[in-house]
Length: 295
Image 1: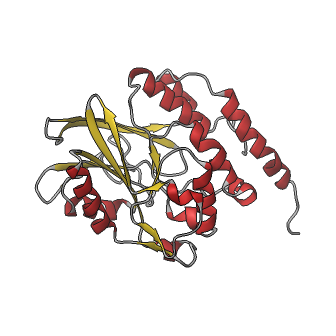
Image 2: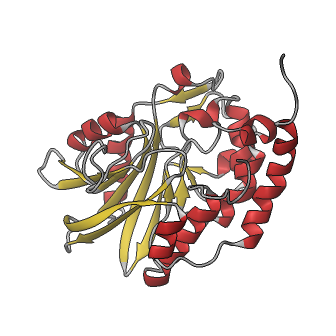
Image 3: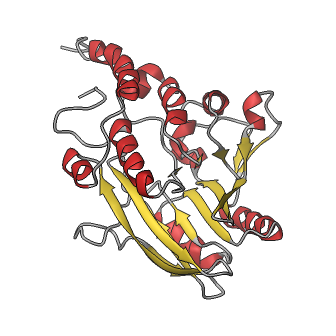
């Protein structure tokens, strides 16, 4: 079904927006982060390429997004066109170019950002998998550098700015994210993607609890969350910190984006403007589906 709200369906931008607005009614300062692979996977990409996320992402209210490996399936120039179209911060600390492209998007890319909440500084660092040249087709002149070293350098710079709450927003896969958590001091939360892992405290099929709790080399806890794939879930995590920025308490879980769950969290009505934008993109896809490609 190619429509903004398929009958009996789940997931998608409209339901995601409803869930986020429901959470922000009670927690207006909640951070909303996207860990990559917005491109690819459906006929929306086949027909429209980067134009769909370029039109929709800024309307979602993200504090930051990062690329996944699939953002490079059509070459790095396509990804930069997408970045150039956005106002949302795009973080890519371990991505570098040689030589530097003559693109206005380059001035928008950042290794990390700092956000203030309740007088506390929060640093968010973005990393994408080093194996992107193997799993995608980024093209020549772009490098995906060592995630661990890049994160260590970013953490040092953030701590020098008196930032002691640090989130790594990464597209590395759950097992790699666990290893990264155990290898780098100073990180409090890792928001991950790439392995399509479902974490849950109630689903028997989940790969682990939500969150997975690891310890950094100095023994402080670091929380790992990821929320399956295909925008079927919104991960939600509440975290408490002490005065030194060390995690002291947490709770959370994935929110299934279906109508029953949206009703249960008293989500607001669907955004008709957002739905119309998606339906406009869907119309030529529906026409495409009527074409015979073989007999």
